View 1 (cartoon, rainbow, N blue to C red):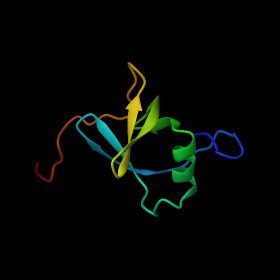
View 2 (cartoon, rainbow, N blue to C red; view 1 turned 90 degrees about the vertical axis):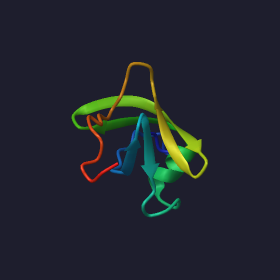
View 3 (cartoon, rainbow, N blue to C red; view 1 turned 120 degrees about the vertical axis):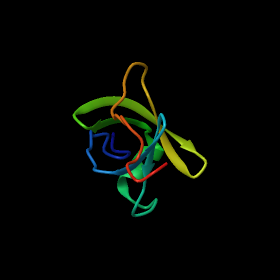
View 4 (cartoon, rainbow, N blue to C red; view 1 turned 45 degrees about the vertical axis):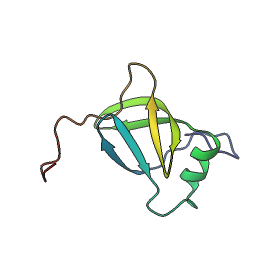
Length: 86
């Protein structure tokens, strides 16, 4: 992501959850964290997970930010349902 004041490229580890084709960004420490403030100001982000990287846009979806990946890109892989049921 890009820093809202500095304009520099920044890297933050974040919590996320995947449900179907949606990836939810979770502000575990609340909306006062730097990454959350940055994504609100400049929603273009780059995700890396499970050895893959992709570019997307964080979109406000009621209470959460979800990520819309650019066409043909996906930075996560959810090959099966949770081993804990559902």
